[in-house]
Image 1 (tube, rainbow, N blue to C red):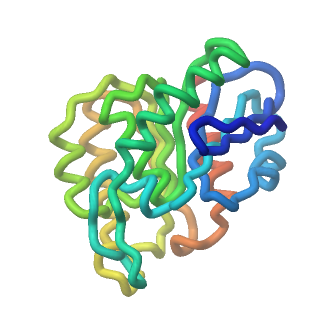
Image 2 (cartoon, rainbow, N blue to C red):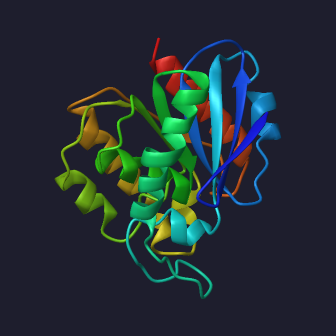
Length: 217
């Protein structure tokens, strides 16, 4: 595993198997990729685990009130997108060669992956796993955007709609709505995982990446 830094942001890179696409996976500042790497054994990909120094600030597309607790969303997704497009991805291409690019994430990082694609980041596939597609005004905004067709892999837990948080409870409905909207224009894979939002997250991310890579075959 190699560790890189650009403009104060860290990203770790590991080749799993031989060749394959570059899979950009958004993580928290203290999230270690080792458990995910182990679960992806047998695949062929270059895993690029790029960190957000502040999860709610860096992965949110625009400001919004807190979903729980007292910390709101600062809405600096556009800044993260510029860094990913202008600094991280070019360095990966320079160091490891030009490859197909896939962008994925879990929860708010999954929302960011969709946002980055709809804002024009050049990618061939998007994975949004238990993504925060319930985010304020996001579903309406997403349906109004025109973006290049990609392969889409979407999942969500079957108990997430039962959360006591009324905003987050809309996650499944928003995911299904957008999956149906995008399926009119491009291939979409959608599946339900078992459990709530915080259950078996590493396993869900690994299955999501497996599904995204499988859609490429």
